[in-house]
Image 1 (tube, helix red, strand yellow):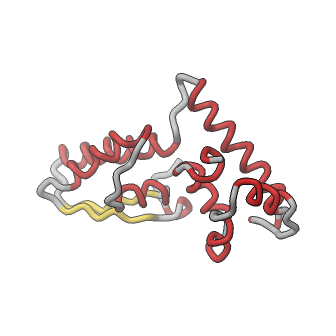
Image 2 (cartoon, helix red, strand yellow; image 1 turned 180 degrees about the horizontal axis):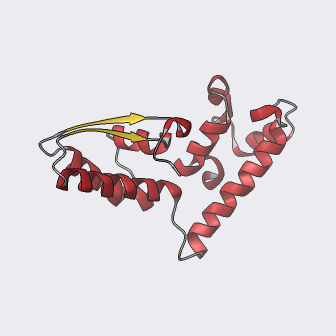
Length: 155
């Protein structure tokens, strides 16, 4: 169940799908209750879709992504790609002589990782550890979250 609900990557996906006012009841259930309650829900999810459908497809996509990360040697987690882009961007800005920078990221997960002081584990640990050494140089770096629609650099 850890892979489907409790690991960091899964939790970030669920936090985007589950409204904030319901997250306190979504995460604490035991495994069986969590599955039954969500698969039998008559509530609406995002965009008016059946929550049971959103939940079922969400679980499947999380499971598929986790398997792909294990069995596909070319798979890169989207968060790892975003973190790498932040690291490369900070290096580039420093090398170009920028000493005041507003770093805008459209991934809430990346924003939280960069702002938290907790020790990150797994595939992103090295990247998350490298970034503070870049931001703590003799310059001003402000990290802000922007929505993807407001990100003028997003593809």
